[in-house]
Image 1 (cartoon, one colour):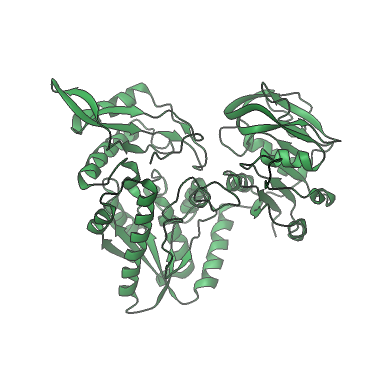
Image 2: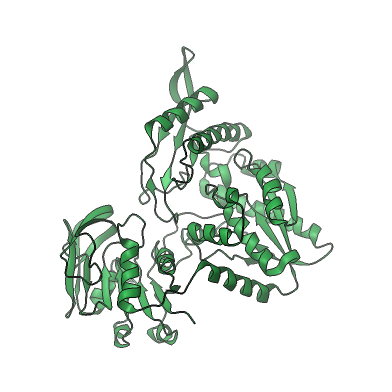
Length: 514
C-alpha cells in the first residue's frame, strides 16, 4: 500500500487542491471531514496529516475544531490557513482578529531558520485569504516568516514534523508552494513518492467493474474534455456495455456538436446516440434570466433527455447507470465539501432532479482539470479533445447575461469563435486556461458604427490562467492580440459595438460571470 496523507477538510474551497498537490508530489492522499474523530483518523494509519483552510474564525461559535489529542499520536501534521490557526490554538498558541486582512498575492519574508523553507528565496509572493492571524506560537515552536501586515505566517517545531503556514502553498500563484509541500512531505516526513495518474485509472476501472457487473451504462457527453475522459475510463472498464448519449441542447460553441459526433467517435469507437433537444431547451429557458434557475433547468432537461434515450436503449437491455464528467470544483462550489460555501449550483450537482432514476457513476469526481487531462493522455485520447478549453456544462446559457434566445446565442457564438481563432493564431490557446466570452444581453451601450449612433451589446473577454479552476489569475494577453479580437468582433458581429476585458483574479471574481 502507498503512503497515505489525510487532508482534513475544515470547509476550504481549496481542500481538494491540497490533496491534488500531495498527489502531484506522487504521494497518495484522501480528504476526510473535520468531524472525523481522531480515533478514526489514526485507524487509517496515515503517514502525515494536512489541515486545510476554511471560511470560519477559530474562536467563532460553531467553528470547526481540532481535537488536541491528535498530537498525542506522533503523526506529522501541517496546517494551512485556518488549519494553521486551528493547530496553533490546539497546541496552546494564540489566534487574534487584528483588523487587517490579506487576500490574493502578498509579499512574504522568511528568516532562513526554517527547515520547511530552507534554500528558498528569502522574499517571495504567496497567495493569502485570511482575516485572523496567529499572534503567539505554541510552546516548542518558532516563527519563521512574516508579511508586512502579519507577523507570523509560518511556524514549526524542532524537527519540523509539526509545521504550518498562513498562506496557501497549494495555490498555483504561491511561489515555491509546491516545493514547500514536496519538501515537507518527502524530505522531512519521509513519504514515498509512488502515486501516479496510472493509479487513478486503475482504481476507477476496478471500482466501476465491481459496481456495474454485466449491466448496461449510458454516458452523457456534453462536448467537453471531462465527459470524454469519463467515458473513456468507463469504456476501459466495461467495453461494449457503454453507450454514450450526446444531447445537442443548442448551447454549445460553434462547431462543437460536430466535433463530438465525428471526432470523438472516430478516436474511441464508442457507440454514440445523438438526441436533438435544441428546441426543448430553448423553450424551457424562455423568459429565464436567473443563472441558478438556468442551471437547474438545464440539469433537469439533460436528465429527461437521458431518460428518454435510456428507454430506447432499454428496449434491448436494462440501463441502470449514468456516467457524468463531474469534477471536484463542480462539487465543492455547489456546497459539496465539509462546511463549504455554496458559490454556484453546478448543473451536474445542484441541478439534478430529485426523482433521478439512474445510479450515477462519476469517475472524475475527486479530480481537477489538470489531472483529467493527464488521465485523458494516459487513455490515448487525441490532443484536440484533451486540450480543448474548459466549457461549462450549461454551455453558452450562463455566458448570456439575460434571457437565452436563438438570436443571442448566434451573437455569442460568432464573438466566441473569433476570440478562439485569434488566440490560436497567436499561439496562446495552450498558455491560457480558457477565455470565456460573455454577452451582456440585457445591457445596451452607445457606439458609433458606419457614422451612425448605435446601441449595441457589450462583449466581455475573460482570459484566465489556472490549472485547477479553484483559483485563477487574469491572463496578460498582448495588446495586439486583444486589438485583433476587438476589431474583428465589432466589425463582424454587427450587434456588438464594445469589447471589454475582465482583469479580476479568482478570488474575488469567479471565472464565469453569470
